[in-house]
Image 1 (cartoon, one colour):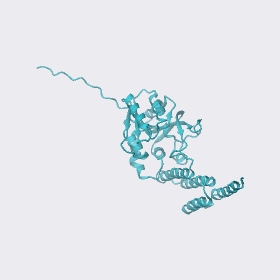
Image 2 (tube, rainbow, N blue to C red):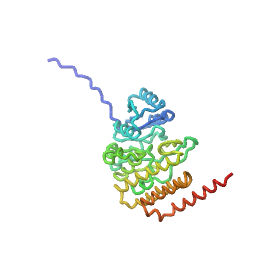
Image 3 (tube, helix red, strand yellow):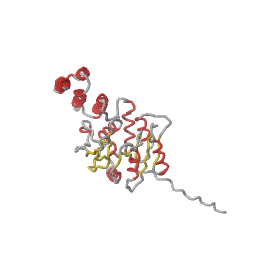
Image 4 (tube, helix red, strand yellow):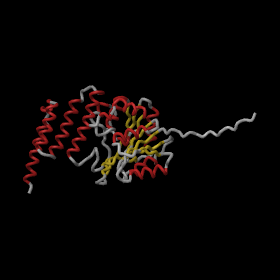
Length: 323
């Protein structure tokens, strides 16, 4: 009996160990640098780049498509016919990632260390109890063409991170299974008042897994003059600050002991009043102070409210005296 010819086995493409989740919107000027910094990574394992493009009004999508055409085995594009918003874009881009680990890099930031992923994955592979690894990051002030080093303190425990988040999103690598658990447990889409999706994610990681920080500076966070997290408009500054403290308070209530609650409420009020001591009218300052005291009467005993009010009144008088 004649033997049937055996078909040649076609090797299946290997699932990358790391997926880079890069969301982008109107990043035409900055995106090539971000993408190239991923392509320059020197690793002993497979890395894919997943681009989440959200119907930009500039040529961002064309930049994405050009890179996908050049590197079809390394880059994939997630997009749609209509804008879905930053939160949905963030989620769908993550869900398209195939790797065991997911590294985050926004389309306007970049990596400055070609060994970044190799170093962080080595930590995660050696320690199954470590859920996320992050590093230091340089900050680049776009309008001033100025760089500055990261802050000296880098925390890894929940109690300190809920009071001061020292994690830059562009430096993180985390286990994909834990990110999926975060979405299922926290359901950030139910919190439209949260103006960021990375801060709650890393607070959850600090409460539900172990975090490791490497001292190396591996990334650059670009600070634009106007963005969701940074604005010259004082009301937007206050809104973003309030959002961060709302996230902190939500996590303190569910994952903390409660002993940070008043400290967070006091700082939220102090930050808003500090901004209002320089900007806005006296009535706006008093309205915010009264709102905070009404909700948390203990704040009336704190010196910031009255002290910053005196500063605001004196500052207004000085401005009036100027010729």
